[in-house]
Amino acid sequence: MKRVSVLRLRVATDQVCNESSYQRIQHDWIRTFQNPWIGRELSSLLADAGVGDIRREGLWLPTHGFAESDLLFEIDATARDLSAELPEALTWLEAYRRGEAYAGVLMLICWGRKH
Image (cartoon, rainbow, N blue to C red; front, side, top):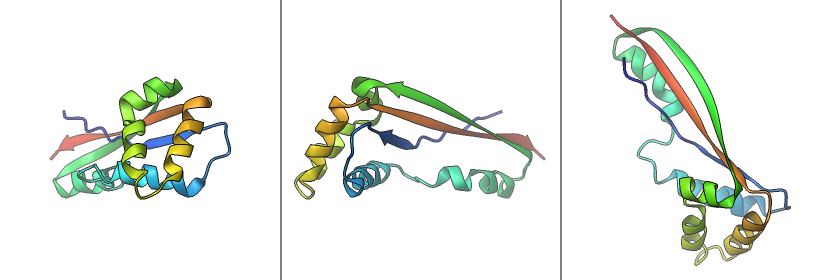
């Protein structure tokens, strides 16, 4: 039985931040995925491949603090790359770094039996 995991970035701060900066940083990070929508498509892809009795499970795995979040999601690098086009990304990054930074991985796991 194979399990497929899907990652999705979600970050938050206790600081008021520019929502468009956050959304742009998240969007640029998500664009690095070969198929960022796999979580929404996985069940039907399995069904199309002849897998039945499909089951799903979602697991939220949180990170704590900027160092853990950045290690997993490369938040610093993404914000710095984006800052040439969107200078407020650096302001957002510093607020995120100073705040109660957390992020998490939402793992969407689907499995079933091949008929």
